[in-house]
Length: 130
Ligand SMILES: [Cu+2]
Image (cartoon, rainbow, N blue to C red; front, side, top):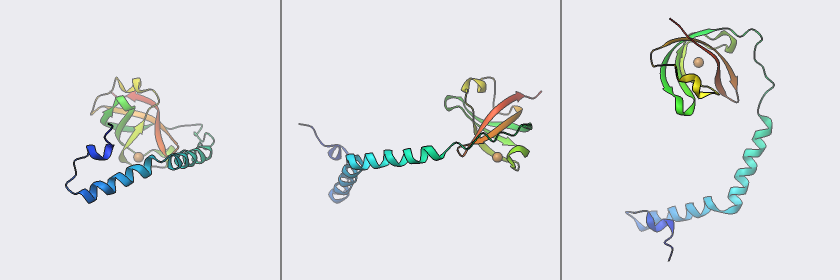
């Protein structure tokens, strides 16, 4: 006596409920899952451009706006980053070792170095400023 997942969703309209059922079936179909897996695989090989880290990475300055240590992310309001050709802005950076965020607090002034990889920006150096 297993109720289908569809029946567990309270629906104001039977028609809408039926439509969601069809959607759920379609997305869990084995063929669809296989195609999705294949697609992500294909994209995987193309990634990771040869390490383009500039030999002389330059320090940039920033203020810590928001810490998300659990996910290894930090939002910085940063000044110009010449090595990335980036103007001042507020944006999210990743860190490979979330422990490095432990010493930071919102509002801290830092200087940092960053690299771009797979469409994300990673902090490679972080130093608290006095
Ligand atoms: Cu930026």
